[in-house]
Amino acid sequence: MILMMYIFILIMIISNIMMFLSIILSKKSFSDREKCSPFECGFDPKCNARIPFSLHFFLITVIFLIFDVEIALIFPIIPLFKLVNIMIWIKISFFFIMILLLGLYHEWNQNMLNWSN
Image (cartoon, rainbow, N blue to C red; front, side, top):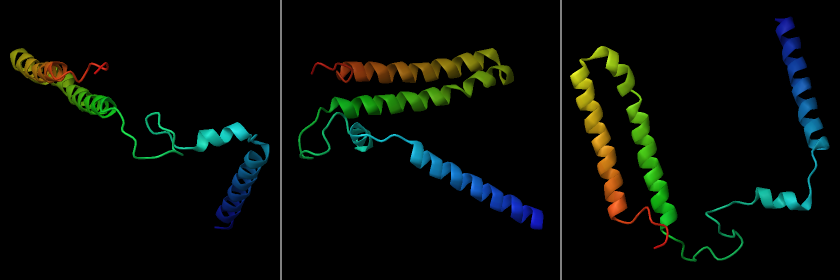
């Protein structure tokens, strides 16, 4: 029990020394203040927050999230190949890829992928 207490105290001392050294040795300059300021889609955080912004930022984010989730759903299809019949696996894969392609076609049809609008 005493040994554990000594180890705990030693760990606390070492961690405090390391934090203190990092504070002392880190170089902070005037230009580092800009790194700490928030960044929101290219806006200056010090100006008016009610200025209009392009809706394409939002649409591209939604498209990324949709396809990111769908890609994560594709991964379980791969091990399914060893467990089921090949025709069932092809049907499942084809159905899922068609959903992805139909979503991409809809986004392309709605000009969500064109940045020039």
